[in-house]
Amino acid sequence: MAIPPPVIGLIGIGVLLCIMLSRMPIAFVFALTGFLGFAYNVKLNAAFHLLAVDFFDTLSSYNLTVIPLFILMGQLAYHGGISQKLYTAGYSLFGRTRGGLAMGTIAACAGFAACCGSSPATSATMGSVALPEMRRHGYADTLATGCLAAGGTLGILIPPSVILIIYGIMVEESIGKLFLAGVLPGIFLAILYIIAIYIFTLINPNAGPAGSRTSFKQKVLALIRGGGETLAIFVLIIGGLFIGFFTPSEAGAIGAVGVLLIGLVERELKWQGILSACYDTIKLSSMILLIISGAAVFGHFLASTTLPFVVAGWVTGLPFQRTYIMLLIILGYIVGGTAMDAMALLLLTLPIFFPVVVALGYDPIWFGVISVEMMEIAAITPPVGLNVYVIKGVAGVPLETIFKGILPFFVADVVSVVVLLFVPQLALVLPNLMG
Image 1: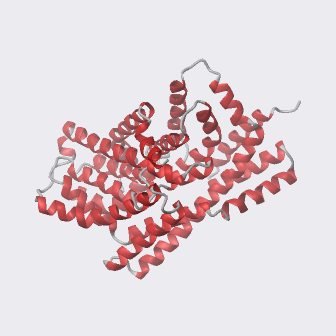
Image 2: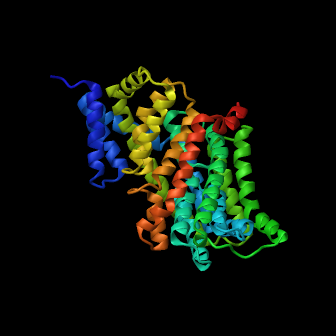
Image 3: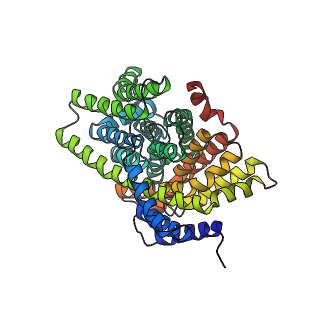
C-alpha cells in the first residue's frame, strides 16, 4: 500500500532528527534527508536536479551577499576594539549600582549587537572583556556568566541580525522591515534583562557588589567615546534602510566600510586583525550558506509531501482561539530548543509553522521577531544552549553554574515573548512607518 505523502514528510523529519544524532554537519543532514525524501516521493533524477538547482540558486543569490557583509562588519568591530569601549561606557553608566557591572555588560552586549549580528560572537567577545572585571569586583559566577550568556542573545535580535536575514530569505519578506521590527523588542528585552539583574541582586546582594562612583563628566565622555561610533553606524544602517536610501546588501557593505574606517582612524585595527576578520567571515559565511542550501532542499521535499499545508489546514480548523495555537507553537520552540541548535531548529520548523501562522492571520514580520526570540531562548536552555557552552569555554566554570545564572534571564525572555504576543505593535510600529 502506498504511503500518503504527508506521512512521508513526517518520516523525513524523523530521519533528519536521527541523522542529526550522528553529529553530521547540519547542512549535509538537511541536504541528504531532503534528497532521499524527494527521490522517494517524486523521482531520483528529479532529486538530483533539485539538489543542483537549490545549491546553485542559493550560492549565486545576490540577496544572500548581505550575510557575509554583516558578518564582516561584526568581525571588524571585534578586532577593532569596539567591545572594550562599549563595556567601559556601560560600566560608567551602571557601575556604582548593585549589580551595575552586569547591567553595564547587558548594555554593552546590546551595543555590540548593533554591529555584530551573531549571538555566540557577542557572548564570546563581551565575555573576554567583562568577565575578568566582574570577578575582580567579587561578582558571583552565576550572575556573571548568566548575564553574558543571555546578553549575547541580543546579537540575533537587535539588527543587523543574521537570523533575521535568514528568516527573511526563507519566507521572502523584506529584510529591511525585519531589521526595523527587531529594534524596539531588542531594546525592551535589554531593559528586562537589566531589571532581572536588579531583582536578582536585591535577593542576593553579595552576588553583584556595587562598583566605584563615576562623575557625570566621566559618564558623558565614556558614552561619547564608547557608544558614539556604534550609534553612528547603527543609525546610518537602520536610517538608510528606513528611508529606502539603500538595500540591505548595500547597508552591509556601508556598515563594514564604516567600522573599518573607524578602526583605522583610531589605530585600533591592525593588519593582522583585518586578515583574521576576513578569514573568520569566510569560514562563518560558508557554513551559513551551506546550511541555507541544505535547508532549501529539505524545504522543497516537505513541500512535495504537502505536509506543511495539511498541518496548516488541520490547525486552523481546531476549535481554539488563534492565541492558544500560537502559544502551542511557542511551547514547541521552547521544547525543540532544548534538543537542537537554534539555527537548525528555525530552518526545520519554519516550513511547517510559517504556513500555519499566515493562515491564522498573523503578520509575517511580527512572527520573524517571535521566531528570533525563541531562538534566543534556545541558545541558553539546557542541554544544547550554544551560548552557555561558549561562556563555559571563556569562564571555565561548570555548566550547572551558568544554567543557574540563566534562570532570571529566561524569565525575562518569557515575559518579552508574552508582551510581544499581546502587544504586536512593539515589533510592527517601525516597519509600518517604513511603508
